[in-house]
Image (tube, rainbow, N blue to C red):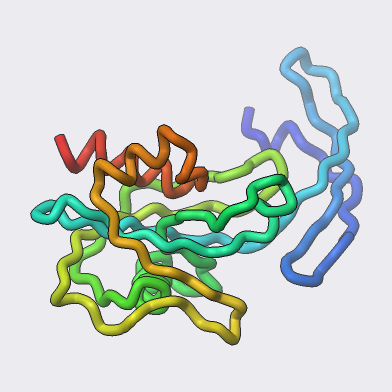
Length: 193
């Protein structure tokens, strides 16, 4: 039996359409024992996104960004977040969008990029699927300073860190962003072997 056969949507209401879309839905769910249960969930639709970790095997470095994230701040994190370059797809193909984001945020025009996986980042409440990429980089690929678009509220610092330091920053809590941790772990487990 598919999930489609186990759900009956009763009602969906729009709660907010400001920055992204927040809705609440009441539905009936057919439980594993065959009984039906009415449930309600809020779901936040911000669109799908892509993220990329550039790495340089010869120099043993990675490129990351540091920026302010208001939701992290109001949840008690009083620092800038260190992250891999990322952005929403905005109706573009994942590879095309992430290439543009890397140019905007990091100032690099990459050669070959490799998609490594897709993941739901917070499936209990957010609809977003994130497409994960890695790519090799070198200094000849630098085409600008990066930093993002100030008119979009971006104030991004570009970081070039040793791979070992970036991995240590996960362990000591300086890197707390899930997508970045996933890509650094992927690099350590699959690329650096």
